[in-house]
Length: 149
Image 1 (cartoon, rainbow, N blue to C red):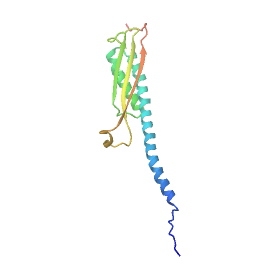
Image 2 (cartoon, one colour):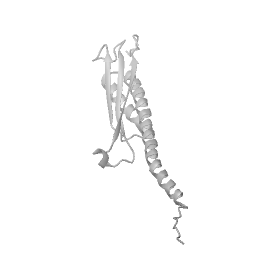
Image 3 (cartoon, one colour):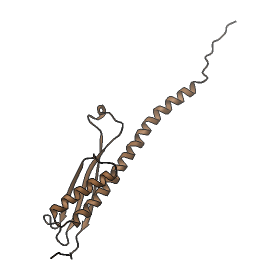
Image 4 (cartoon, rainbow, N blue to C red):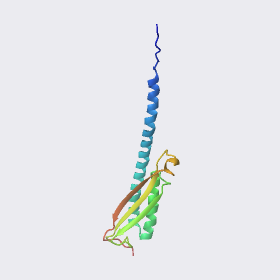
C-alpha cells in the first residue's frame, strides 16, 4: 500500500495576504502623503500670491511694494507650514513697467516655490525630490487715487 504525502497549506493565505497588503499599502501611503504635501504647498503659494499682490498695490511706491510683497508672501507660506520653502517673487506691470503705482496700471505678482516629497531618499533623485509650485495674482490700480498732500 502506498501512501501519498500531502502538504498542509492551512494558514498560508494569511501570510500571503499580509505581505500583499504591505506591498500595496506602502506605495499607497506614500502617494497620499505626497498629494497632501503638494496640496499644502499649492494652498500656500496661492495665498502668498494673493496677499503679495494686495500688499504691493497698497504700498506707496514700487520699492516699498516689493519689500511688502516678499514679506507677506513669506508669512503666507509660513501659515501653511512651509517656513523653509524656497520663494521667488516676481512683479510685472502693464502698461507702465517702471511705475507700477501709476493710475490704470495692472500689477501681476507671480510666486514660485517648491515642496519636498516625503519619505524619498536622496539616492533616488540625486538630492531631495521636489515638486515645483507656481501661482500668480493680478491687481488693477484704479484711475483715481488718493494723494497725500
